[in-house]
Amino acid sequence: MAIIGGLNSVPDVKVLILYILNYAGGRLSKENLLQIALDGGTAEYFDIAQAMDGLMHSGLIDFVSHNTPNELYITELGRETLSVFENNLPFSVRRKNQSALLRLLAEIERKRSVKSHIEEKKNGYEAVCTLLEGEDTLLEYRLFVPTQIQAQIIVDQFESNPTEKYKNILQLLIDEKLFDEDI
Picture 1: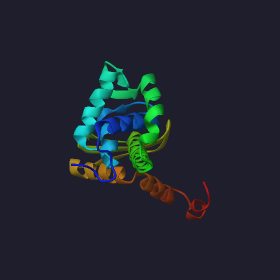
Picture 2 (picture 1 turned 60 degrees about the vertical axis):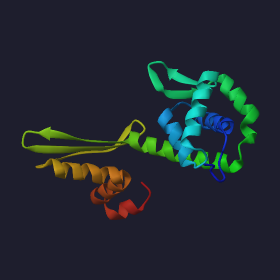
Picture 3 (picture 1 turned 180 degrees about the vertical axis):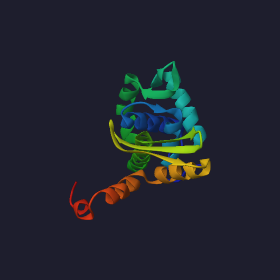
Picture 4 (picture 1 turned 90 degrees about the vertical axis):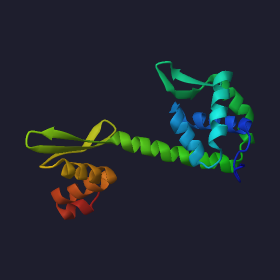
């Protein structure tokens, strides 16, 4: 079934995959690459899978290492090929897939900056929640609660909006007048 406003041939999908990998500026897992192409709504699953296989066999994309056979990158030959065919991709397809890639990268970064887990203790559980910005720890707290369900609720609430939790804690700890000013 053809996608309206999308790519309907495997050669076009190959160019799209090269475009996504190049635009990502590094490596992507097969799952992330598939997610971006599907999220962009511009290609079908089987066309993407067939295109990735063809690109691998042609040496246009490759595994980062044989120890991590899930991560792909665009080769120099792939970049050269893309430079010839990139303008064949409709602008709308490029824009949709750039947006999908940016959403995915933002989600990956958010997951990297938020760490939380539950530790079982002698008389209960401890919810450990950490918010990072790069190498800096913005917030880290440990809350002891009697049940694992309570600890899970704390972790889930933190993960749902960690920056809002950070802001709320600052509001509690800093004079409200000072908080209204730029910190």
